[in-house]
Length: 230
Image (cartoon, rainbow, N blue to C red; front, side, top):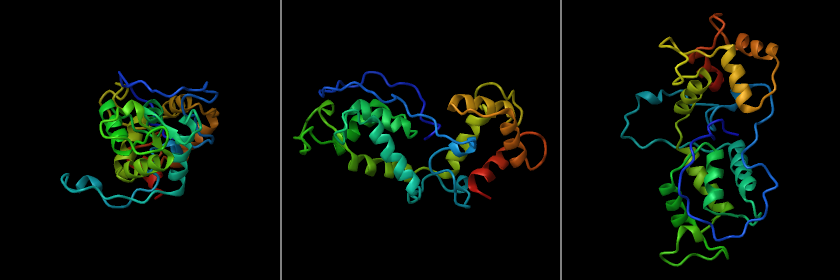
């Protein structure tokens, strides 16, 4: 799962023409099991290449990285979770939440553009020109192609830094201008948000394992080393 799946709702989605069956599954992705919260960082951020991305010129096209098997499985799981009719097609609403579960909170304009470029009719046939996005659907194959492209274009270092900010509570006013670091209180908060049931001893052990300077907290540099597997 991606811990960045949560985000603000986009207003005014087009209405689906398809009849839905009751959703007996969860309407949002469930938390992954396991005691290591650092395993819940952004998709593709686990092994960032050694190169320093911040030094690359902004105008250069971002290099793409091949997806791991875990990432492909995650894409399939997101599609299957929100394919409420189990017909291997998802409509606008299901596309929105499936992409959101993978960490992409896309605006309505982007979603409708995806449907126009990749969508098919409910019958599986190509649409006629001018077909409304509300009558188009994304197949599992198209969803894999779309998400593979989006995930492979992510900057791994950018994802790691964003994950650190979420762990450390950057932007919430909690850091008070001090150097941002991850405390045991931050781990406790993230564990609660992810639905992880961890004992205090487990949280403390995570801090101690990765706290290289023995200040009782995880610095940004230490967090990057964790995610890169240094």
